[in-house]
Image (cartoon, rainbow, N blue to C red; front, side, top):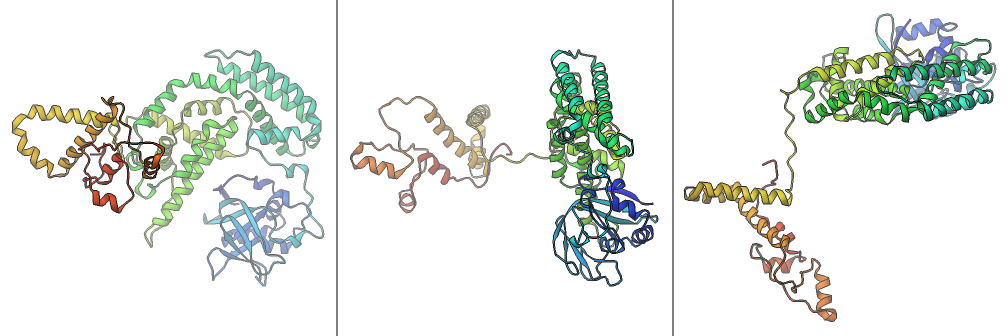
Length: 532
C-alpha cells in the first residue's frame, strides 16, 4: 500500500486506470519492488490503453530505475535494461531501445510513499512509451474508463449532451432552469431556501439521466454515477450563476469589504511579518495568479478546484525555493499545515480578491455532489481558516515596505511644494538666509533652485499670455525650416530666462524644445519625487 500526493494538474484517478489496477493485482510483485527501490512508474492514461497488450514486457518498460550516469535519465527494469528515457520540461523523451523515439506529454505527477515512507514518483503520461505495444491481446476497457471527472462548466455541459439518450431529461432540466431564472425571487436571508431548491432540481435531473444512461443501467460501476452527478450540478449552477452569486455577494458584502480594506492596508508587508518562516519567504507569482482567477469562475466545483490549485502552487513554489537555497548537508525543509496559513495570507493580499468570503460561502452551500478527492475538502477548510485569521487578527502594528520612489511629480504637487516652501521661508525670515545659501550648495538646495525654475515655467504656460499674436515655437526644427522657406512667416520667440541656454551645445546636437532642453540640462544630481 502506498500514499499518493498529487503535485500537478489533475487528469484522472489512478484507481480507475486499467494498468494501475493490474499493477496492484497481476503484477503486484513487480510493483512492490518498484516501491521498495523508489523506481519511476509511468502510467499511460486510461483512454490511451484501448487495444494495448499489458504483459511483463509492457510493465518492465514503464517501470524504470534512475540512470547511474545522467540526472533525470531512467532505464527500463527488464533483464537487459536496454531502454532509456529522459524527463525534459514536462515531457518524457524516449532515447535508446525504442522502435520510435518520441516526446510524450506528462499529464500529472503523483508523489507516493512506500511502507518505509520513502518517496517515489508516478507519472501519468499521455500514451504508452512505445507504439509497438498496440498488438496482440489487449485489455478491454469499459465505457466508464473512457470518461474522467470534468471540472469546468463547458466540459460538463459537453459531457451531458454527448449522450443521445439524455435529450429528454436535459430538455426538462433546461425548462426548470429557465423558470428559476425568470420567476424565482431570492430574498435576503433566504439563500438556504434557494440552495435547497437548486439541490432538489439537481437530484431530480440526475435521477432521470441515470435511468436512461446505457452505461449505468446495471449499476456496474459507481464511477459513472459520480461523473454524471457532478456534471449535472455543474451545468445547473453554471446556468444560474448570474442570479445566485450576486445574492451571495450581497449577503457577504460586509466581510468582503473588510477583507478588501485589509488587503489595501497591508500591500507591501513582507511574509515574515505574518509569521512565514525564513526558509519559506519567497515570491509566489503563480499562486497569486491562480487565486486571482477565483472571482471569474462560475460553478462551485470550478472555484473549489481553484482553491486546491492555489495551495498546490504555493507548495510547489516554496518547495523549489527551499530546495534551491538549502545549505549543503542539511535536509530540505517541508511545509507543514501550520505553514500554509501565513503563506496563504500573503497570496490573498497580493491577489486582491474582491469576493473571497462570498466565494467560500458559495462553495460551501451550493456544492453537493460528492467526489473521491479528499484534498478538495481540505482546501476549503484551509482557506476558511486563513480568512478567519485574516479577518480577526489586528495587523495595525505591521508596517509595509517602503514604496518605490517616484521619478516625477504632478503639476499640482510641484505648485503645492513651491507654496509650502515660500510659506516656510517667510516664517523663518532673515535668520534663515545664511542657512538657505548653504542649502543651495547641497542636494536640497539644488532641488529648491530647480523647483523655482520649473514653477515659473508652469506659471507661464498655465496662464493666458498677454500677447496672443506671438506664435508658439515648434518642437520640430525641420518644420521650422520649411515654414521659414516661404510657406509661412514665424517670429523667433526668446526662451524664458529661467532656462539655461548654450549655443555651442545646440549646434552640436539635434535641437530640442524649450522644456525638454531644460530637463536635459538638469543640474540635479539625483532622482527626486515623493520618496524624498
